[in-house]
Image 1 (cartoon, helix red, strand yellow):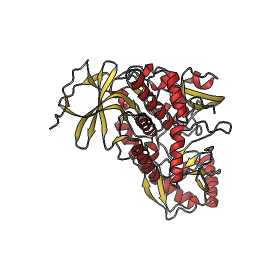
Image 2 (cartoon, rainbow, N blue to C red; image 1 turned 90 degrees about the vertical axis):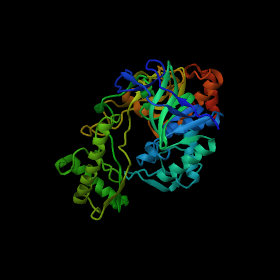
Image 3 (cartoon, one colour; image 1 turned 180 degrees about the vertical axis):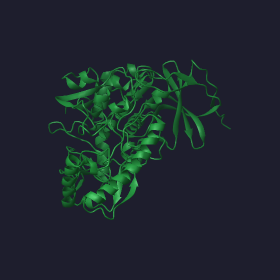
Image 4 (cartoon, rainbow, N blue to C red; image 1 turned 135 degrees about the vertical axis):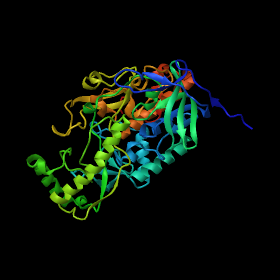
Length: 470
C-alpha cells in the first residue's frame, strides 16, 4: 500500500500558513500554526488557484508546455465572473481596425463560435447580441456576446483537451511558505483539508487571495475608490427586448433621472440597463461582512427596481425576477504588489516597458462608486497608441516561485480598465502559464529570472504579440 504523506505542524516564522487582514502595501500581521496533520493531495509542476479566465488561460498554457498542472476553484465550474455573474460579453475593442488581443482569448471565442454561441453586439442602446452577425471566422473587431452555459462547457472542454487536472468545489484556506517560496497551498476539499505541493504557483483568484494568505504584500483601495458592485437579475417576461419598447423606455427613464429623481429608487445607473441591473452598491469585496451586507441589500433593491419599472415604464405589468447571479459582482479587488506596476506613467504617456507581455489601449476611467457624477469615476481619459503590461506586474515582490494573472496583477486602481476584461484576463493567464513553464525549464522555478527574449518568442508562437503590433 502506498504510504500516505502528510504536512506536519508548521513552525511560525519558518514555513508557515499566513493569515490576517491586508490593506495598502503591507503584509498580513500574523501567521497561524497548522494544528493537525494535513494529507498531501499531490505534487505538481504548476498549481493555478482560481478558474476564472485568467486561471483557465494560465492552466492551459502551462499544461500545453508539458507541465503537470492542477487548477483549483471553489465553484463547481470554470469562468469566474463571466459565468458566476452572468456577464457573457467579451470586450475585443480593436485599435485602429486591428484585433490586437489574440492568443488563447481569440481561441476560446472561436471555440464558442463553433458551438453556434458567439455573436457581435448590436450597435444600439439595447446592447444585445445581433443574431444576424455570428462571429464565425471573421476578425474580432467588435464586442462579442455569448451564453453562460456554453461558456462553462467550452471552458471545461478547453481544459480537458489541454490535460489540466481540475479540482473544483475546493476552497483555498492557506499557504505554506518557506522564505520567498510558497511550497504548498492548503485547500478545503469536500472530503477534508488537503495540501497541494507545487514548484510554481499562479494566483488567479481575482483578489490576490493566495499571495495575501501567504503573507505577501498587496494593495486594496478603499471602497469609494473602487468601482461599484452589482447583482444582475433576469426578468421574465422581458418586453424591453423589443427595440421600439426599449427605446421608449430609455427616453422615459432618462427624463425621470434628470428631472424627477425622487420617483426612482436610490443608487441607480444613469441609463437603463439590460434586464434588471440598473442598481448598485458600494463596499469592500475582500471583506466577508461587507459582502454579506451588499448581497442582501442588492437583492432587496432589485425588487424595488422591478416595482419602479412596473410603475414608470411600459410592458412590465406581468414581469417577475426569474433568477439572479450567485454572488455580488465585483469589478476590482485586491492586487499584488509587483516588481512593476501598471500605473499612471505607464498608461498616460507614450512609454512602452522593456518587458511588455500584454497590450492595452491607453484609455482609463471606469464605473464610478457613485452615479451622481455620471458613469465614469473622477479619473478618466485617453492617450493615443497602445501600451503594454510589463512582465514584472505579474511577479509579486515577495516570492520567487509565484505569478499572478487576471484582475489581481500589480495595477493602480485608477487604471484597472486596461487589464480587467475577459480577453485581457485570458491573455495575461496565458502569459503567466507560459512563464511558469519556462521558469521550470530555464531557472529552476525562479519566475523573476525567466529569459524575457525566450518568453516573448514562446508567446508569439502561440499567436500572441506582446506589444499588439501585427
